[in-house]
Length: 289
View 1: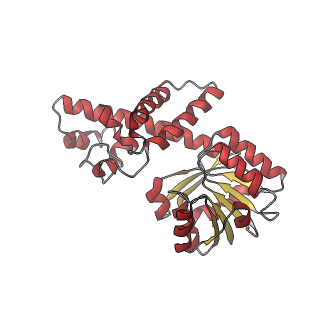
View 2: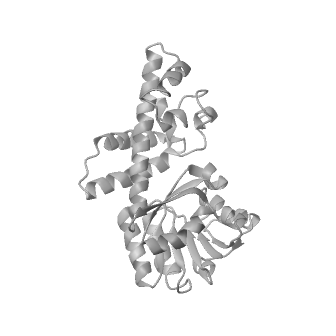
View 3: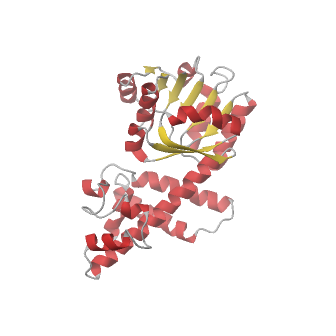
């Protein structure tokens, strides 16, 4: 299948490479010349505009920074430029309203489209082990699924258009809450004279167990290898977590959903990011304790 891929950043570059490995013909575009060079070395054909990449494509996959850019790219360079009958897959993490608006525009133009944000980070993007949360019609999902399966380990239909984004921001709000709580618990354990490894050995098999502890421990040298073992470099940047939390707060407000724990986590990450820590992994928030 010929697939146009728009947005070759930290996540998109690895995702496009995995589509090539799966046997697809990938036409790639990004504003970064460096990203295009990397994509070409991974077997992608590269183009100087998104509309050129979409020419003749049976599917279009995008991984872009925010909702405004997603809407602009699809409105100007994808809808009406890709062949009739192509399916669109936006894997960006954006606000629910914009996701639904862009899908509506695509459907009006005669295309099927899904919102398919990801969970897993850069390593999973490179390794083809992402989880995709997909919103859209059953028909669009079935067309998108084999493409997504070439880039991930799990592809889950979340329901109607925009529900992929809803699942992503709810999941990441919960992740931020868990991480902040895990950091607090380790910090308090230390101050009470309890060794971090001993606390991990107890809590990881008790009712306090959670993913932030057992798969992504914020304490160096405890649990499986994680960014904390690399001075909080790599992983999921604080700035990106904050982006997702801001989207979650906007969505909660629009849905009149009370999220006191989510709001507190968002405030903590606002402060941590504002102190110049946006490039550190989000587990580095333990430094504040």
